[in-house]
Length: 131
Length: 388
Image (cartoon, rainbow over all chains, first blue to last red; front, side):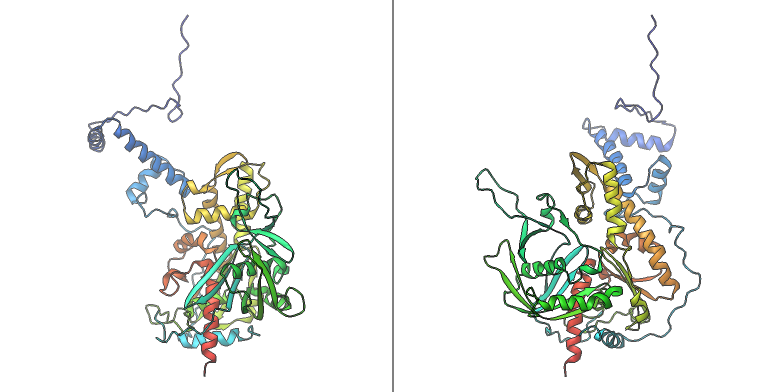
């Protein structure tokens, strides 16, 4: 009886925990990446740590910023330098929400006072609250 | 950004207490030897017994508590997990000003600052500007009435660590609109001296039309000051009780948590507030991981998403109308800014928004302490003005 053929899961859906990488050595970019992979191959097992750390970092970035990552986003951020920031409670660069509309012309007060005048006015203004 | 005078003799004594019993964080401040001393606790309490098990089986959980008007109340973050008693929040209502809990939290902080029993105190109490006309007189009347109601201003409190009760006599109550302390924090130093805040063009950054945007736990207050003069029209409608952290962050995050763990019905906004404070102190995925009702959950994405939504709402509903009205600068005040500042700065890069880290004399003041510390600067400035 022929064994039922096992279907290969679609890309990104496998659960086996293994990923194999084949570099296209005719592509200069992949060639360079391959050289780095060889350099990191010793001591044994450390290369995996680097790849795991890189992917874990991306996962943390996604969690922290809420930006859902895909390869295009990762490449764009890597090129624009947004992946290497100052850390902390930072937010992704994004445009102002469409709900925020500033007027094109605003009225601005031309009359300005000095720090001392401001202080005097402010204390007088608040004096009514004291008693 | 340089103090006007080199003379910085302390004008305010240790018995002037600046209180900021806000809806989220209740704190008191005083100046001792020229330095600000403070103590703060979350705005929540619960009835406790304070009983200890008579056993030597090991360490027992201990929560801070205080005895006040015949009742023992636990307070501080340690209380959430130690009592089944209902947590008393009493937030966002005009009736809380001058009420039992308002005075309790103020006295706990005064005692925790180790103000000597028997001291005669002047207390500065802020209230939301839109409510000040209504609650100002009730705050003064209630505090000056004293515990006995005989207008002696005497209050008694005993902390867990105290061997005997402490008595304080409040001799004067000054009520101020919230946000006024923040302006004073920028304008004056603790000696009451004027601090220059010149921009690159040599113009004072507080001059012209400025708006205080005080984002507290309960309310968001906005009012305008023109060249230092309070605009009375704006103060009457300054308070928005939907604009604070409770409605815009704590409730939505609580809702997210309850969606993930529906059985966690014991949680309140006070619990979420403690998680949020922990996360802001250490913004890592680990500090946003909680164990609730037997489940481990991570609320980091909820925190960040709700912070951004809050920033959008404040931008659209508070900040944009201010720019449209010709506001020259916005003055940041209140802990709510901590959660939205990074977005607001990106969205308004060409606008003047004053924040504490911009100036040497305010750099050490957290946004949530700005009103409380600024009220001391205000008191010092008033005294300096009244000097012959």
